[in-house]
Length: 332
Ligand code: PMV
Image 1 (tube, rainbow, N blue to C red):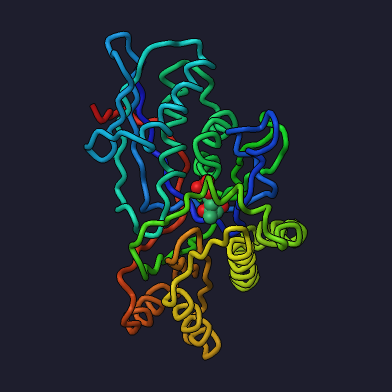
Image 2 (cartoon, rainbow, N blue to C red; image 1 turned 180 degrees about the horizontal axis):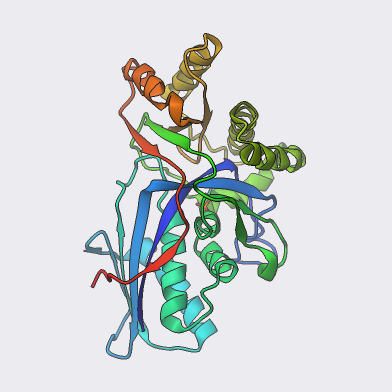
């Protein structure tokens, strides 16, 4: 009962912010209020091996070579308990997981970790390994993990119903060589987890307004990806990131993820674009770092311009990638 899977992190073009975990019967399901759209990132990979065995006396979780305890372990064990119950298996489990990308590089590892863990567990426990099922399972670990299961450009459908709420691919990774240059302005860890943030979203007076505007935006972004229309995609993802951060900043208590450098970078980007130097657009997740989205031909120019920003710590480059998959080489 051993299996290994790899999965990639993703960057959301239309964001998931707010879920129904505080509604009766929906706790822990991570059911979102709106559809979201993302791209899998080829340079941000998690590999996870799980083994369920009667030989293990307790669950052990090893991340990047270190045995973890506390909240990190609890999160994995909660997931193991859920899949064990589904599969009617009681064996304890050893989980080893490795990220090829550094922590605090502006990319959350929970999406790739959740997708790899879900696929490996489904395989090891004899549960279905079809994409929609694994995406639903991954959602339980972390909502955005549901989008790291299918390949390429992915849409996660919102639904109040657990069985209907999973992600599917809207275009393969080869469809469009879009580039995500992660511009790191800070390596500080976030103080409020996204799990807490999702529950605060509804306290913002702008949350409802956001849900209204996002309906139209999700269709525009979907179409822009199909059409490889960078101008429309770019304008929409910038509005979208601002809209999510407005909700964050106006929730109670307010969540401020941006730093002064985040704004400085956005302003520099707008100047470069207006003067015709580079066609790139920003999006920002729950942190201060900025994801710059452009077509491949713009990448080198963008990197050259970024070199001129004294506050920039480093960059991390990604292209679209495949989804979660099983591999034969185990970590132990
Ligand atoms: O999946 P979570 O609970 O880590 O939430 C992800 C939240 C954002 O990264 C800010 C947006 C998104 O859709 O990925």
